[in-house]
Image (cartoon, rainbow, N blue to C red; front, side, top):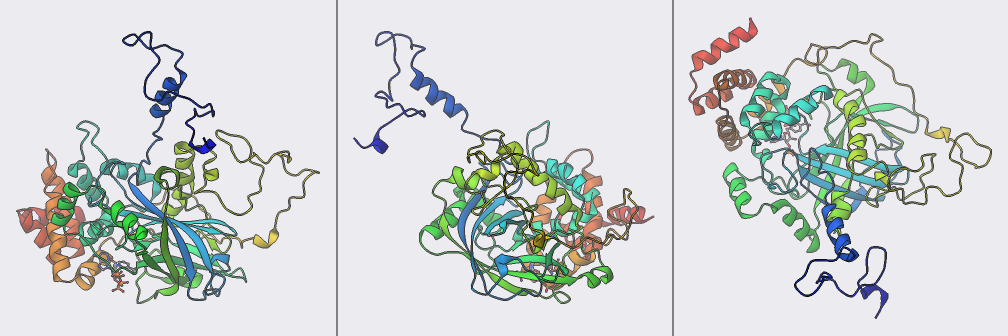
Length: 501
Ligand code: NDP
């Protein structure tokens, strides 16, 4: 019999009995020495790794990114070095709040993460299908996510927690509006856009920096479920998005996205009338037009879901030469928290797992740690500097220094004038100028449906506070939602005035 067909233990010993345990007599108890039984049961008990606290339910695939337009005036990143250049990628899409077995069609933002295996290291663009987010300071992230998860007492999802938090944090309104719109229930992963969401930066060959926003536009066209369709699909197929993605790729119908950027010069960033590093705001297309960059095609399913999709780990900290960060506070928080989450979930050597491993040379003095499996750099010295190896620091990768706005450190109010205190203009514009009548009506109905779940002694207070935000974005919108909820408008107006006073 060929070696690869012979059943063995994990240590390679062939074994002959895989279905019956060794017992004292045909009806007697099991012998402790049946090691194969122990190994089977013990390994099974350890099959689950901690699920992601957020983005637990996901789908992923490998593919190719191809440059279609020269952006070398903005960046020297090798991934964008010439038109036609191809780079292998791995993308993962996900819902946010649900557990690993939750339904794919829940109303929720969707994660949209792409790992580019570039020759200067892996670059991760880890965003969502929305250009903005609910909060703009990472200190608020854990509190916010708790409201999207289960109530500590009932262990159930709680619209009361969600709307309480959103109504107390007016900066969330823009993202809440997008979530309550048709885009809150995308038709699988192929028909949605992806956004880097944060402000990032790029450096060109002359070491000049610009700020950028990334947009992946779906080539399949935007397609969403209505609230009813999403609920129906939930009972019909919990794994709709997974099935849709894997089947299209398996059938050779490869999904594509066009990558575009918006660019803001350093001078412009000091003059714009909004905080360009505020994650609750977009950069208007009229002022910062989209520039073509390339196309991403997903054309290869992972052969093993756990190996590649479940163990994939993305981090916005992973940028490469020519691509950089910005003072966006949420980005700064994520630089720390994403690698930290992976070290906890997958272990300190998570970057050696094949899907996360840089396919090009990785040289450093990190050694040891749990599950170190790459040879641990063999006999090479484990300290720097040393007199034995010929490792050098390549100064050509140096970045220019950052110029700070201020040398005073303090706890600044995130919603002050400088932080960005206008929570209503951009959502108002989205409602009035971007949405058609059907989109407006769906937004109103979805919001009324979701807010109807608020309950308990604080119900009226929470609903009135949130209605004030909808009114401030757009009066007609506020009125329609209030009518849908059968709320007495006089009380809302009174609450609005009290809030202002
Ligand atoms: P534009 O008219 O140029 O842009 C409107 C954008 O809105 C388009 O990118 C469109 O995406 C997107 N859109 C359409 N319907 C929805 C929806 N239901 N939920 C979320 N986005 C939607 O105007 P501006 O750039 O001046 O932006 C106006 C408003 O549009 C903003 O205040 C913001 O709320 C929203 N928006 C702006 C984006 C930006 O980066 N400027 C990105 C996304 C939304 P598509 O072209 O893919 O259909």
